[in-house]
Image (cartoon, rainbow, N blue to C red; front, top):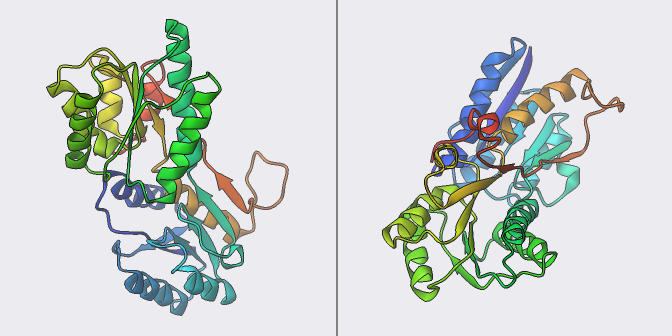
Length: 298
């Protein structure tokens, strides 16, 4: 029996709630896994205490999505020094010495995927000087900055750029507020990318309240409600780009392989890779059924 401890931040967001739910699902599906899932917390000291408890319990592996990667590095190093396999999920620790394997999404890649989709769609329409809006999450966060840079870089390959940019706070209320202001400032748009599908509930509400239909909208992260809207095809929302909520569940499976001394079956190498960055796929009406089954509710 492989004993694994799992800790993550509080489930105060649809994506984060799905992180733990997916860990529960994969844990119950494997007969040789015993996963201890502690209550999610945004208190760094409490999360450190959770990891120290796992160390004292002498678990085989710890799968950790830290509230703050830098502040959790020392305790991750302590676990590694104790001979415990540490899998770092999403928010990276300060030192690569503190974990065996990292798995996470690609924020820059999210922006690239959104930018390529929008750029190609506008090119296909023959739009030469488009008005493109961007609704960020919290602007000060590195992940937001990475998403924006990827978006800008991808648009630039088409000769396009962002004309209107606003920042929300990853919540529906903030998304609706900033998008209402954005639409008032931009009477004509060709496309809009919203970084986060949870705040996208408010973004789409603002668009519908304003009666705007002249542009296409792309979401971010991959929520089930957004995918259902894409499938229905009765709004401006035409696509979303994935930031996988399955990554911690995959982290548990990687931890199992590491403890058992196994590699990844379809690779030639005998060992699990040190780092895995997950691809940010574009979900459209054409492929939505493939992704809907693993989407999170927002």
